[in-house]
Length: 178
Image 1: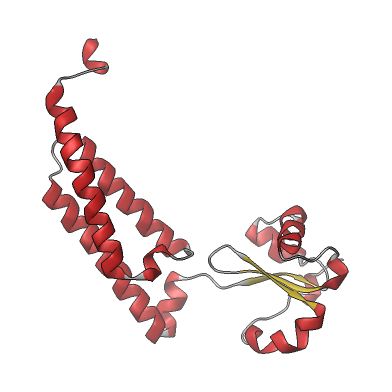
Image 2: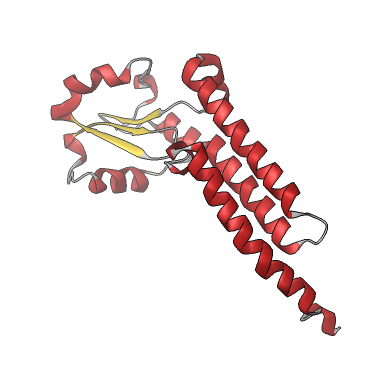
């Protein structure tokens, strides 16, 4: 029963050595992979980050995962992320595969079907509007849920200028309810 709380110093020493080494290794991998790996994350980036954290945790705690194996696995994940994001920058089909498309949630009124599909509430939209320094929804042209889960808010006075950034979007007018 006492093994639940303490199983000897060997595991503690192993963790005290492996945790800092893995920490430094992750820093090196992230520096080598560039700013992309630490910028605002889309779903693909988030999955890679969680997997990397799981690998680090496993290597620190589990005796049967060596530091070399953990470094190889983390390096492979970072390489795959680099290759996929490089491919996404060059080929539209890869970008479509790993990234979701932005969604217009507000287009001079709430776009209810898009809000339901993205599971976004009116309160979240109003909060995004306030965060952008706009006090009244009547001043808002669009609220867009970006592929990194952030909100973009376009004021009505910016609407004509912003049209060019909405190329490829379709506005769900038919499902909008103010």
